Image (cartoon, rainbow, N blue to C red):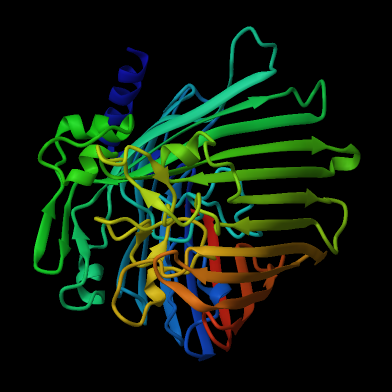
Amino acid sequence: MKIVSNLILLGSMCMLPLTSYAQFTKGLSYRAETGVSFSGGEYTPFWLTANKQGLSSIEKNNGYLRAGVFRELENDKPFSYAFGADLAVAYNFTSTFVVQQLYADLKYRCLGLSIGSKERYSEFNNPLLSSGGLTFSGNARPIPQVRIGIPEYTLVPGTKGWLAFKGHIAYGMFTDDGWQKDFVVPGGKHTEHVLYHSKDLYVKIGNKEKFPLIFEGGLEMAAQFGGNAFIGDGKIDMPNRIKDFFKVFIPSGGSSDTPMGEQTNIYGNHLGSWNFSLTWYAPNDWMVRPYYEHYFEDHSQMFGEYGWKDCLAGIEITLPKNPVVSSFVYEYISTKDQTGPVYWDHTPEIPEQVSGADNYYNHGIYTGWQHWGMGIGNPLVMSPIYNDDGEIIFKSNRLQGHHFGIMGNPCADLQYRILLSVTRNWGTYSLPFYEIKKNGNALAELKYTPHQLKGWDFTASLGIDRGAMLGKSAGGMLTIRKTGWIR
């Protein structure tokens, strides 16, 4: 009843013309931004494009104008609300007008509800220095969804602050139907009206006030389901009834009106990862945090039947009192194994099951784990938007590589960031490369925030690509941003 009364009170305030503006603008901030990039070579350099929530372009010489208003949650109150509207117009992007974010959030005590498109990053990775999570990275445009759960760690009563948990359940819809039709070659596979599902559950064990070592671990899963798939002259109509929402929540076989493969296996395209970390809080505010992500696309990988050879393993070190190097990240990524090169679904004649060739991020019916051509998972697995033959597919999902990120504040108004990634790429099991393709991508960035100009910052970035995956390219980007409060 208390939440209902709060909502009624909020509605009555909106009807009072003398007070509504003051209430509406309380805690309201704005952001205006423009960015332009220029480059030589075939594409915009990789790290000028990747992990920007899809608001970027691989086409060289591009730019955008962006503006948004936001209200943040008030965590010190039992009931609070937030919203955001973030729009952009762009040149040489996949679309000229972009609704980047449009959402409303409600919070009641530990419970949260979020409706709409909202930028989100991986739960386990530094968004400025990491290469990105294996399931979610912040590389693709936000997916409109209804998301409910416990968004922040909440202490379990009776554990004296030693045990906390958080989690969510979400359903939504992909919005790239038009882009797929424009990008794909005639007769090529594309989809429309595809639905989205995600869920996660994390636990945290430890009490920083009593002991400086904290363990975090959990499971995150996602799925594509419903919609229509067009392959050649054929059309596959995937059902999206209420019971199908439950079939993706607890992965289950499809009904008789789904393709046979969906009936004998699992309905929809499912994927996810087990994520673990240990955080040590050292004296003088140092922090050392090793973490590990194990990616899976079927039960055999999910439950360790074939071992956990594929992973993202990293370490993050924070040195807050060191102005030259304040944070450092190293990551090792491997997606090469995929439980081996052989897949065999058991039959009455040969009842053995061999669950190999998982073909990460790809799927037989859907166009894979991508949105508007950008991979939703780790961007080092090159996104379908780079394909020049009109196929929406991840053409090289088998790789091994190393990634480094470093940042610091050598001066009061100046921050720098450096990223370096090197990978070896094998293609896929079904279409391997004739030779291993090596790839290197680098970024050097300076951000100037003059204290004389409150709310302004200026960022200059230089990106360089070398190797057989994206070829040679070099380019720069200038970003100007103004933030502030609406009084």
